[in-house]
Length: 475
Ligand SMILES: Cc1cc2nc3c(=O)[nH]c(=O)nc-3n(C[C@H](O)[C@H](O)[C@H](O)COP(=O)(O)OP(=O)(O)OC[C@H]3O[C@@H](n4cnc5c(N)ncnc54)[C@H](O)[C@@H]3O)c2cc1C
Image (cartoon, rainbow, N blue to C red; front, side, top):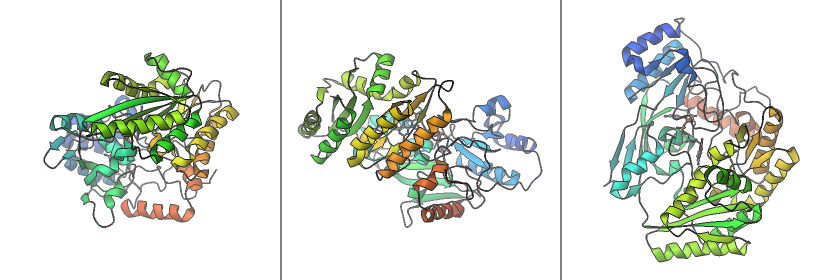
C-alpha cells in the first residue's frame, strides 16, 4: 500500500469553463485583495503537505478573512471547476489537508476572530484560531476550553473540529465535538448554514468530517470553569502490558483521571535525550496521570486510587510536589513528537483506538509485531480512552517503505481484531482511506457514500479523502 498521492478523486470534478484558472484567479485577486490569493509557485508549494504527507501543489491558495469571502471562493471554484481543500495549521497526521489533484486550497489561518462570553460560558471562534488561544483568552474569567491535542500550540480549531481532535484530557472531559454548541459552515454550492444540536445532529456529522462535507467558518464552543486543584503522578513500570492493566484497574476502582497518558521505553529515552528531565530510562513504560476538581480531598483520594492500582501492577510511583514538577512531566509528553523524530530520518504514526479491556494484549501484540518486522516501534497515547499511537521509525535508505506500510496495516488489524477502530483522533484522510474497505462493512461504506453525496454531490470538497474509490481494490 502506498499513499496513493496523485490518484484521481472519487469522481473528477467537471470544469465547465475553459478559462485558465490563473487568468480568472487574477479577477479573484482583484476582488479579495492581492495578499489573499496566492498565485506564485513558490508560495503555493507551501500548501501541498501536512504533518505526514506531501501531495500536489495547489493550483491556487486563498486566505479568506470572513465567511462572505469563503462563499466567494466556493462560487469561484464552482465556476472554474476546481475542487476545494480546507486547511488549518497542517499539523494533521492523516494527509487530510493535502491536495491530491489540481485544486484550490482554502487556508483558514487569517480567520482568527475569538470572543469569550463569560456569562454564557461560551467562546465564539473562527476556524483559524490556534487551539491554545481559546483557553488563554478564557483564563482571566476563570474558564478554560478542555480539549487539548498535544499539537494545541499550533493546530487550529477548524482542524480540530474537522478531525474531532482529542487529547490527554479526553477521558474525563471529552473530545472537540463534545464542546460544540453551534456550527457555521459553507456548503459545496456556497450556501451558508448555521447548525445547532437539533433533529438529525448535523453538528455531529460535520464534526470529524475532515473537510469533505463543508467548510467550517465559525463555531460556538462550551467553556468550563478551571478546576481549583490538580495533582500529577508518574507511575513507572517494568513491563508495558502492566501499565495498560493498571489503567483499567484504576478506572474500575472509580478514578476518573483528568489526564492520562502512556509512554513506552522508546518514547521515554527519546524524550530524555531531547530534554534531560530525569525520566526513568530503564522503565518499560510510564503513565502520566492528573486528577483534578474543586475539592482537594477528592482530588487526593482519586490520585491515591490511581497510585494504588499502579503499585498493584508492579509500578513505583512518583507524585509531583509542585506545579513546576507537574509541568515538566507534561512537557515530556508534549515533546514526544520532536524527540522521536530525532531517532530515525522518517516515521509513520498509527492512531488506533481499542476497548480499554483489550489494551494490555494490544500493547504487547504491537511490540511483538515490531520485533517480527525488524522495525523500531515506539508507543504512546491517550490510553484512558483506548487511544494508542504506535510510531514506526525507519530509515528509507535501509528499510523498505512497503514493509513499513505492511507493519502499519498489521497494527491496524490488531486493533480491528480487538473490536477497535482505524482512527482514534487523527482521521482517515488519505492515509487510511483504502483500508476503510477492511474496517467497515460494505453496507456501512455505502451509507457513508450516500452521506457524502448528500452534502457534496459533485465531489468538490476535499476529493480523494476518507472514502475509498468506488471501484478500487481492497488490499
Ligand atoms: C506533534 C503533534 C501532536 C499531535 N497530537 C494530537 C493529539 O493529541 N490529538 C489529536 O487529535 N491530534 C493530534 N495531532 C494531529 C493534528 O494536530 C490534529 O488532527 C489537528 O486537529 C489538526 O489541526 P490543523 O489545524 O493542523 O488541521 P489541518 O492539518 O490543516 O487539517 C486537518 C483536516 O481538517 C480539515 N480542515 C481544516 N480546517 C477546516 C475547516 N475550517 N473546515 C473544514 N475542514 C477543515 C482539512 O481539510 C483536513 O482534512 C498531533 C499532530 C502533531 C504534529
